[in-house]
Image (cartoon, rainbow, N blue to C red):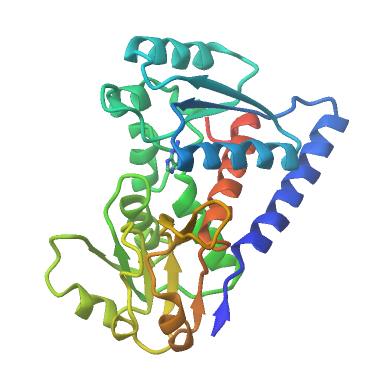
Length: 291
Ligand code: GUN
């Protein structure tokens, strides 16, 4: 079994990005600039956004964090999105999800200029990705593909099971894994209504677990030498930790790890790669690589 080190891979990629930014600045080019909108004080979102700001520093990017309280109106948020769309210094921006109940998330996403949508959530980017056109690809699926490539894990012709069908991870992940000249895998997507999900998993060469259900994937669901990618990051109360919680993956790591060929840990697997992919997308936005 080989542990897939997402943290080390992300650190190496961020160092490459920083080197490229240095060259751009030395040649008199513009410093890439990522902005983030954060609504409220959800612990998970606070951590994600803080890590994104730190990653910007590591890559030599400028970053701007715009905060709103939970009672922000949809109109105020849309006005902020409009302002960032028009700000020529901002290359890309994200609206950290989830948003409070009274705000229509899709309406906010659709208000983002797709050319600055470095999260790859806008329907234009989602659609372009689905037909293999250049676009911003959602950061977590892009990070997973990058990890698989980095570890030279063959995907072509393999049976891949994606657990979960979210717009952010499950659906784009399945699209990328089946994409011609990309994943080239045979993909099955399983979710809460799937019949005999265990059987599907047992037949899989690659399992990508993104259902947000701690320890869901157990040893009996995994065939020998499978590749296991764990996207789960549920915060589970843990009195032994200073923070009072720990991040728990979707895979029961201790019993699954000995059985597989490759596995990502939680934390230190997919998480750091998500942030590093956002940096890649921001650099691409500043270089106007796609649009
Ligand atoms: N919430 C959970 N993951 C993400 C992400 O990748 N981007 C944004 N904007 N919000 C998220």
